[in-house]
Length: 319
Image 1: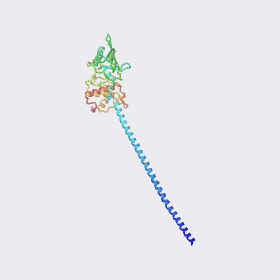
Image 2: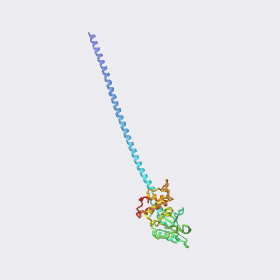
Image 3: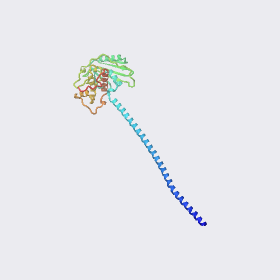
Image 4: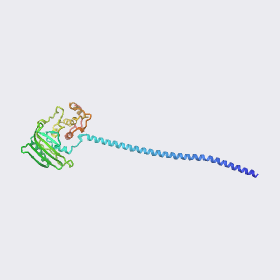
């Protein structure tokens, strides 16, 4: 009987053990499944954070690129403006040296190419005495400081030295035998660029007698030029007085036409196309103009503005 009881107890223990094993087997997959789910969730959240960071970095880089592009475009615009301003000679102000040259230019003269010794070389049919007195009056009119000066006893030559704080000048006048005139005027200028202009540059009202071969006609010459000398000497107010608004516009632009500039205004294009010497240069650049030509173009434009010319920026079309 006791053996039977022990046997029954052993069977119960064995059954309980089997049940515990089965329960443990059933519990382990559930736990493993939960662990995998947590792992997937953690990986998913991590991946989402990484993607978010990458997107933010990409947006920042794009904003930086766009900002850089905008700045480049703005810089290009500024560069274009600067280039346009630089390439337009009519917007250039006269340099100090050019202003002084215009003040010393003797009216109605023929200009020779300046050399290393002199900044202005001029010829006139006026006598040495007349030319000397003109510059004496120029000095007195502007209250310039006159240094050593004088005329030769035979009136064949004279010289004047001017010593202002803001510029200096030496003028030599002598009698010559030349096809350009009987009197030669040579002027050396020291503009003293580091000093601002304080002197005045008024010119005498007395107009010397023009040389016979330089008397101007209001009509164009055979080549169609209004001012055929605008590339060889400085233009004066006397050269422009009496010209019509149309002649002034032509006179200013024929300086560029000599170098083959193509014109936007139809009236200019039609006018110059008819002239035998005018030919468009595909490689035209206003850098080809000499400083004298640039100065003359500015001088004419300023005169047009002074008289309120209506044709400065107006295209009247082909005539």
